[in-house]
Length: 281
Image 1 (cartoon, rainbow, N blue to C red):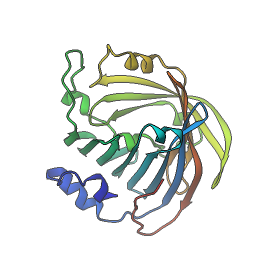
Image 2 (cartoon, rainbow, N blue to C red; image 1 turned 45 degrees about the vertical axis):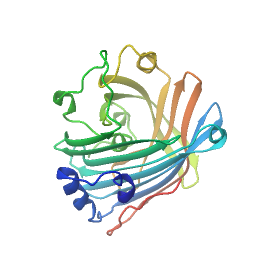
Image 3 (tube, rainbow, N blue to C red; image 1 turned 90 degrees about the vertical axis):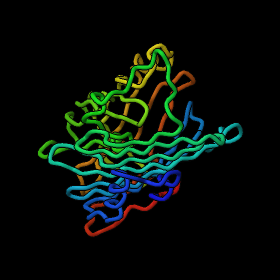
């Protein structure tokens, strides 16, 4: 996974230091192996796999995805992403994030090194194109952020009940290398879910998108997402950790409801040094 996400550029500076730290396997308290299917209107469009390894003070997340189903007739695409960071008593603090993706022959990549919750170094391909109406990304907006991979998971500090409404009452400050935005969650209900490897409760949160910088407010798609009230996430616990993982995500789009749902979900508590390897969708 590390070779895949950092292959397009030789790392340097803080990115190099982060990779050296990544070479040390994490002492694992819990591990998740999950597979997901993306569909719109009930039609499969993609598949993804995710591996999470979390210990008492560190975490690693890696994932891969590819276009499948009817969309393969008109398009092609795949991608890999990875993140690693520290677990403090109160929150996740990411150290490094990397993304490599390709769609219809066009490549896209992002590599972020973070220190103390702030972006310290980054590389983005292709560079963000200037636009007169784009809200500038400033150092002030890159403080206390989390990368998209880490931000997909919710850390529940002691002594909060992982299945309580408090899990949803938060705003997740995400920066993906291009845009800085908040994902605002609010509690709706708790319900039972079932899939291969997991049967139990899921905390259901409403989701709202709040752009901060890097976006273009005049674009219709941005306003559509800001006004979108039909976005939801189902969160379930990763055994042996204080992390909650997405079991299902539902988002209303202009072409139908997009659903990203687990088809298998194996979470196990464990001990010992177990490095994360690249999953296959």
